[in-house]
Image (cartoon, rainbow, N blue to C red; front, side):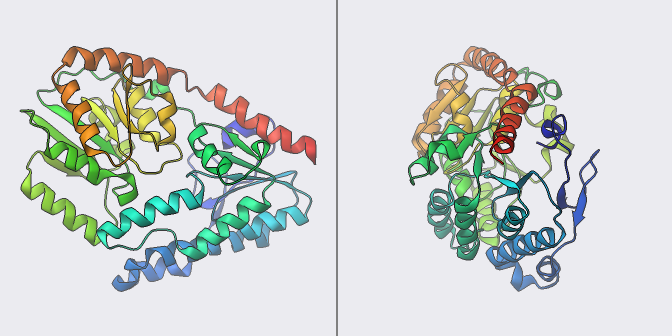
Length: 360
C-alpha cells in the first residue's frame, strides 16, 4: 500500500518498529506489551493485551497527526486518530483485513470455546471497530467475500471497496512434486478460527501410505499446544514446524509440498493461499476464505464448506491417488496467481484514494 500510493501522494507512515527500505515514524511498545512479557499469568489475557496495545498505538498517533488530505488506518487501531484526522479536514479510509467483526467474532468465539481459551479480540476492541466502520468515509476489504459480510449488515455498496492484495510472483518457483511423500501443508496462525483442527481430523482419516501433514506456524495458547502435542503423539505423520516461512524459504515450504490446505472459518483473504498458488500447488480452501474467489473448483484447487473435515479428506484422497492431477491443477493455480500483479493492486488502491480526494 505504501509503495502503491507513493506515485500519487506524499506519504507519512506510523507503525510499530521499522519497515525495510521505508521511512516510518516508529510507535513505541505499549506498557501492556512489557507487562505481557514480564508476567506469565497476564499472557493468558491476550484479548486485553491486544486491546490495550491497539488503543495506545491509536492515541500515540492521534497526538502527533498533522494535516493531510487522506488518512488511512487499520481497523482496531485508529478510532481516535481517525476522528482527529477528520477534524483536521482529512477524508478517511479504513483498512479491514478480516471480515466484518461481527462475522469474524462469531466464528472466533465458537471455535475458541472448543479449546476453552479466550478469543483474541476483546469486546471493547470489537466496539471500537464498529465505531470505526461507522465513521470512516470509505472501507477497504480484501475480498468480495469480506465485502458481503458488510453488505449483509446494511452497509451502502459505495462505502465498501474490494482491493485484493498482490503477490510478488517472481519470488516463487514452481513445485516439482518430486518428494517421496504426499505432503499436505498448512501455513498460518495456529488458532482455532483458522480451522487447523478440522484439517487434522481430515488427515487422521486419510489412509494414504507415505503421507505427511506439516503445520507451518506457532500456537499462542497452552490449550492449542497441548492439543497439537496429543495429536502428534497419536499420529507421527503430523509435524509442527514453528518457523517464519519467508525466512525459512518458500521453496522449502511450498516447493516440497503436494497440496496446500487453508481450512479457515473466517478469513478476509488468506495470503498463504496466494503464495501456494504462486508456487504451483493445488489448494483446498473453505468458502469462508476470501482468496477462494481465485479458486476454480476442480481446476486449480477445491472449495469446500467450512468446518467440514470429511470434504477436506475426500479431496486430499482424490489428489493423493491422482499424481498427474496434482501437476495439472498446480500449473493452473500458478497461472491464476500470475494475474495478482502489483500493477492491478496499485490501480485499484490509488483509485480508492483518488475518489476520497475528489470528495474533499
